[in-house]
Amino acid sequence: MKLTVLGPGCWGLTLAWLLTDNFEEVCVWGRTSDLRDELIKTKHCTKPLEVQLQNKVEITDDLSYAIKDAEIILSVVATGGVRPVCEQLKNAGIKPEQIIVNASKGIELGTLKRMSEVIKEILPDQKLAILSGPTLAKEVLAGKPTAASVACEDEETAKFVQQALNVAGKFRLYTNPDVIGVELGGSLKNVIAIASGFAHAMNLGDNCMGTLLTRGMAEIVRVSVKLGANPSTLYGLSGMGDLIATCSSPLSRNYTVGAMLGKGKKINDILAELGSVAEGVKTSKAVCDLAEKLGEEVPVSSAIYEAVYTDITPQEVLSKLMNRKLKKED
Image (cartoon, rainbow, N blue to C red; front, side, top):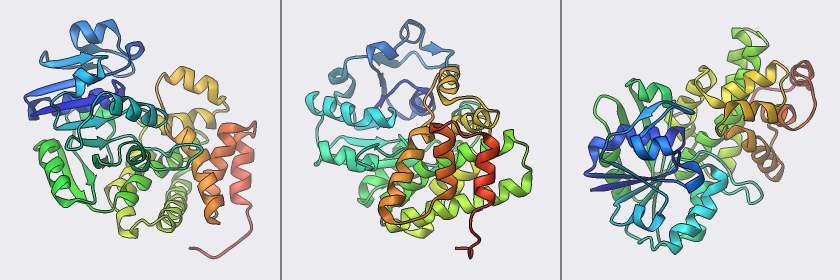
């Protein structure tokens, strides 16, 4: 059986490393500009994470070659690249029976579509599942255990992916038919993770962190349920589980972005220093646009949107959140 991983970023290379022994063949595809000589020649990279792949893992920029005979195609490209990569997959001759497993967490700006909606728009006949959960790449590379959800409306496909990607003792997978809930839980929590890093950098204390996670989760649930998610999904691995992990760990890129914002740094400087994608930055705009469309309030996400896209100071962000009109808890 063959696995193809699309996207040689932090999580893509981590998954290729983690899953190599599950497959006879493993291939990693990336754009020519994203494939460093070190990775191609030695299967090793040091930035943004240090990963050593096994010799049997192939690295290529030829998409047709990469997906040939692959039973599972694991998409781990940045959310802004999902649409163009799907167009390339279409031209590369992807077959309907090949399963795309999307591991990118975000919402497409402009259309406000979830990644599965984008993929299905371009590849309507494709088998598709979503992989999401508390999966900090550095911890996975250190061999520490975690679990995640495989979301798919087709139970047979979900079970096949679950069996194929499960790694005993390290990576436990659960199936879930609620694609909407799993996707939105994994995407919207990234914005709250930025808020968490922001609060930590300002030394606002544990009471504030508890408040932030609770009110942030309330926002995620309100928006997601209006879009068709099952509320129980949002208290599972891809919602609450991922929220706790990313909101409490400096290993999270979104948390790191928030911590830098809380210290008064500007977003362009932060992203240049980070050197990798933090999906919560763009998602902060998408969730605010979604909330406006749905008639929902998302004060934490709105505050982070302002922190990212305007010159508001950290102190002003805190003041706006704490001095809002009093209301009942919901």
